[in-house]
Length: 367
Ligand SMILES: Nc1nc2c(ncn2[C@@H]2O[C@H](COP(=O)(O)OP(=O)(O)OP(=O)(O)O)[C@@H](O)[C@H]2O)c(=O)[nH]1
Image (tube, rainbow, N blue to C red; front, side, top):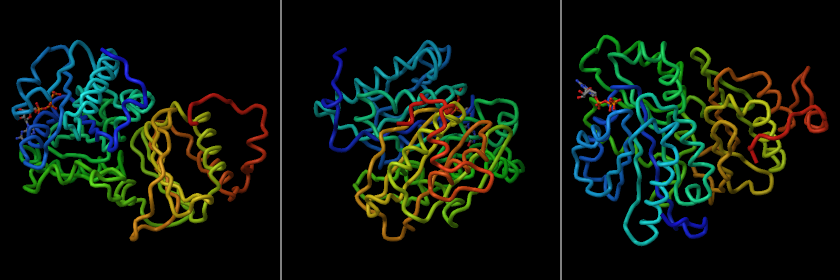
């Protein structure tokens, strides 16, 4: 396959990428089939990966996607097949660049996949980072086994923790479990919108095109993107936890100098990078207060920050970051944020003391 140069893959409007996750048997293929059956879902390629059994899922995806359906085999997407996924996405970007209409790719992972290495691979690849925009991580959770999977399997908790949208399936089979499961979902993931599979409304309307910048060029609602539970308040944080997975939000009203924001991210990467499953945020900067800076990271990697053309009229102009992590040192994250946003906490070092500290570990890739 021809190697593309980054500039060659740059498209006017990046291909939207949806990562469809969920534990074994949760209903991922069922969700995919329903999506593909909806008339609004066009110009979509589907990449599926079946652990161990070649071709099974391809037969299960019923909709007509012709050559848009690509099956990866022989291993799990998050480990051995990552290279194959990257190559496939490169090939699709190449085809799109050569004129084949492609506005969206849905990647269905295996039930055992950790989504974070996949996100990191896409985020750090020079071609993919230009050609694709992550629309959303969608996690399917089923009412029959969801509760058990979440308490027993770390993969299930990770898949749920990093999701922007959560599709609840099999409520028809176990209606009595639904209320408790919704509470558990909230404990693991405070920000993602929960969508019921048995709701007659369009699934595509609820789980596609939910990024911060929309396909038609309009701006998404930051509160929606970051999660409604974090939409209010100022200079305070919220935390939600389940086992070792937790999410916290940092909110700051005053504009932040760009350099301070990036220094904070670098420190965050140094100290907590390994433990960050996902980070997303919108920053009100001193230099360009009218153009919010969008941040998106996974593990120790930061997606090249992008500037939106403006704030939405109905959005509050303030910095908001959501950090989802495993065994995060939350007080340290809050202290760092306070130090870099000018609000040093008592008993915490200020920014100069941190930056001048020769013992600080350099080297994570939040830059
Ligand atoms: N009754 C009911 N059955 C469902 C629902 N969602 C999925 N199923 C069934 O659950 C089974 C597993 O669904 P799949 O869509 O294959 O699940 P998956 O997550 O793709 O499974 P793997 O690829 O094996 O991890 C199938 O028999 C589906 O028909 C639902 O909401 N209600």
